[in-house]
Image (cartoon, rainbow, N blue to C red; front, side, top):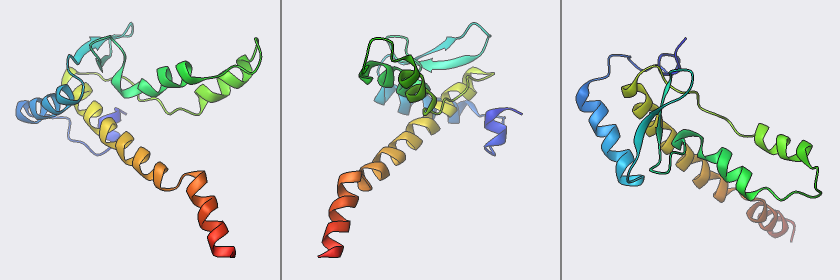
Length: 129
């Protein structure tokens, strides 16, 4: 089953809806464009060619601090925690999925910040006083 269909989206994407999604994405990521992967699937990339839906993979790789030289187990474990979004069968679908992914990441980040470990600990300490 296709990702968009599994999410309840109608696969007959209008040109107007496609252009609206594309405009929003390009506003946030100037230079965003469609790319095709080696499997013939489409995705939307930044102007530097990074998959917008899966930017967290690169961010995790860049931020990972190896505790020792051969810390591949920890590195692999960090990468396995990241949810990846598969590439799409059509160009229009790729842009709509990217729009949904951007909104989803925003909601997750906003809510994660509200419930950070520091905030929870401060609340717990305050409750026990």
